[in-house]
Amino acid sequence: MGLDLEYIGGQTPIDEDEKEGLKILTIATRKELDEFEHQNIESAIQWTLSHSFRAEEVLSEKFVRRLHKRMFGNVWKWAGEFRRTNKNIGVDKHQIGIELRKLFDDCRYWIVNRTNPEAEIAVRFKHRLVSIHCFPNGNGRHARLMADVLIEKILSQPVFTWGSVSLFQQGEARTVYISALREADEGSMESLLTFARS
Image (cartoon, rainbow, N blue to C red; front, side, top):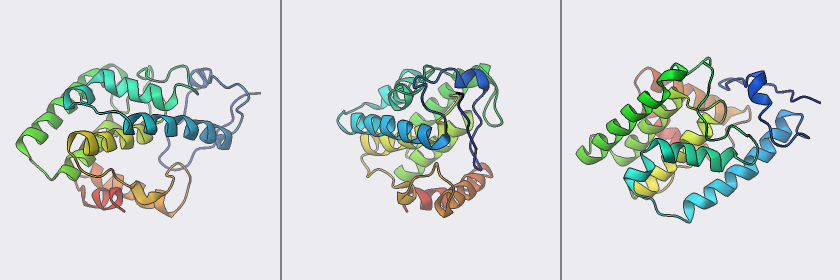
């Protein structure tokens, strides 16, 4: 029995060879996959809440990979590994490391020079991280948790609520979120900031 996935707006399809990285072979549907991933993500959130992190640690390729592995490592063999294929979103697969280093450097500059309020720094970081699209799957959820770690552990502000609902299912909140992302793609962060705190 293979993994049969249906995608909703804004989701990046998983390639057939990436599907072979599924660790739990009894998973056959999107709903089952979402449930197992959700359990794994909850465990990763608890890990972030119980640890303190320094800015140098969070703003590193090692931490980006480590957090993704904590979020998806019980479900996917390739968790924490950068994608090896190009997708319908994101930079070329060979540019992921380079673009991440640019993002880390920019974020350090934003923090040191207080270029924007703390929430905007974290949301800008999240938006850029998603646009790089480091991994085969889970980039949005990963980037939101990265932003939460950044805002709470480094910038000493409350974590975001991200609409206070699950965003991996179709619904009004996801529609608002996708619209806010598109506005951010055009350079306006206002709607994404509002959504992050809603």
